[in-house]
Structures are given as structure tokens and as C-alpha cells.
Amino acid sequence: MNTEHLSKMKIHFVILVVLCAFALNSILCRLALVQTSLDPMSFTTLRLMSGALVLAMLVVLTNRNEIKGRSENRERGENRSENNTLCLNAAFLNKGWITPLALLAYAVSFSFAYVSLPAGIGALLLFGAVQFTMIGYGLYSGERLNKKQWCGLFVAIFGVLVLFLPGASAPSLIGSALMLVSGVGWAVYTVRGKGASNPIQTTGINFLKASILSLFMSLLFISEFTWDSMGVLYALLAGGVTSGLGYALWYFVLPSLKVTTAATLQLSVPVIAIFMGVLLLGEQVTLHLFLSSLTILGGVFLYILAGMAPRVR
Image 1 (tube, rainbow, N blue to C red):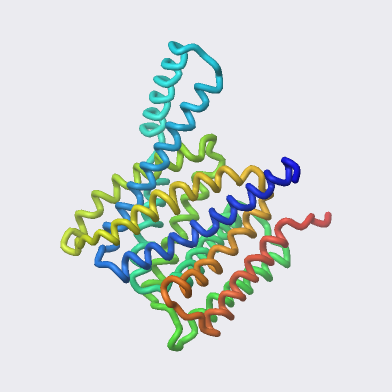
Image 2 (cartoon, rainbow, N blue to C red; image 1 turned 180 degrees about the vertical axis):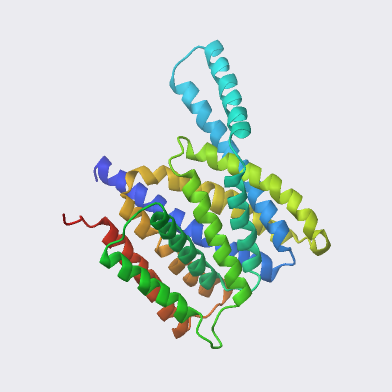
């Protein structure tokens, strides 16, 4: 087995781990808010703080490795470390607060939505809201869609309508609205953070700022504050592992993926979340959910493929 093949296997394994980590965000949140007494706001704050801590540690380790790799003497290495600290401080002070606010909107709405939504449906709605918002932003920015893209978009919208058809398996309207807000928040966060020169550092700073905002916001929900050790553990895992490490690993493999591949791979996250919900939470997959999921994801998949096709001039 040659080195190139081993390298590809490593990337494929990391991709699988990342996609499962993204899906586990939904599972951990649902576990914390349904099977423990931890309140949604505390879950959000702990998730953001632990994510910020893990990302900060990754930034420090990365900077140290860069210093050692340059084979500089100790004095110059120390100066470099001081410069890195100054750069981090400057980045924290100079970057605005709109992006952290978008991240906070995503995280808070995400937590409160999962009080009433099953994990799979929540992941599906989140994914759909992100995709629709990104498409809307593209149209607002002057992007023109071809016929197949419009077809894919309408198929996905039809799938959302099918999901909300009246019936015993229709999701909570309040929970669904909150998850749609969460998706819009994440889409805004993604658009504003696109093209960051150091994505891990930028994400870490945004998580830190969002956690500060979340602490202040927690004061508004002080009357609903409840603590649970298992809930705290789920929140720390959701922030430090499935969010912090998950995003870091995603940025690691992203350069080796084509845009269409990266977008298509993310289609699997709601599917993985649905299966995890069945295995870990005892949730049921109804025909209603199956058909709506198939329609939404199929429409988005068609949109992605149509967008990558060469245009006929």
C-alpha cells in the first residue's frame, strides 16, 4: 500500500469523523435538554466557552510548532511567541462583534429549538435553513441560477412543505422556527467568515466573543437556571469536541476537497443525525420524515450539481 493511498485513507477517515461530529452536536444537545435538567441557556454558554478554550489551545499549539519548524534560536523564538500574542490581542480587538452575534444567534436558537425537536428533524431544518439562506445571499449578490438550480430549489422547498404537513409526526412549530433562525445565524456567520486567512484562530476568537455575550444573556434567564452534571458533560463535549475539534478537522481536510465535494458531503449530516437519533435516543423514522428528508436533500443535491455544471455560452 503506497503512501498516497494511505494519505487518502487518512483524509477519508478524518472526513467521516468530522461528519459524525457535526451530527453529534444535535444528539448531545438533545441528550442534555431532554434526559437531564440542564437549561438551554446554560448549555449554550458552556458549549461556546469550551469550544473557545479548545480552539485557543489549538492556536497556541500551532504557533509553537511553527516556531520550532523555523529552527530559530531561543531568543528569536521568544520574540516570535510575543509577536503571536500581540497578533492575537490585535485580532480580538480589531474584529467586530457582528459575526460573534450571528454565532450566538445560531447557538442560542439551536439549544432552545432542541427542547421540542427530535435530533434528526432539527438537523434537517438547520441544514435546509443554512442552504436556503446562502442561496438567497447569492441571489441578492447578483448570482444568476440556471433552470436546473431553480428546479432543485423548488424541490427542496416542496420537501420543507411536506415536512410541515399536519399530522402526528409534524414537528413543533416553535421549535422549527427557532431552528430556522439558528440556520440563518449560521449562514450569516459562514458568509462573514468566508476567506479568513487563519480560520481556526478566527473561529476561536468568534467563539470567545460569543461566549462573553452568552454570559451576559444568561442573566436574562437566571430564573430558569438549572444545573446537572451529565448535562454539563454533554455541553462540554458539544463545545470542545464536536464543535471545536470538529471545525478544526474540517478546516484541515477542506483544502483537499473540491467545492462540490465539500457541499455534497454535508448533505450526509442530517442523515447521520437521523440514524444516531434512532440508535441513541430511540427516535422513530416515519414515512413522513423519510419522504420529506429525501425531497429536501435531493433538491439541494440537484442544486449543487447544477451549479457546478459548465455554462453554455
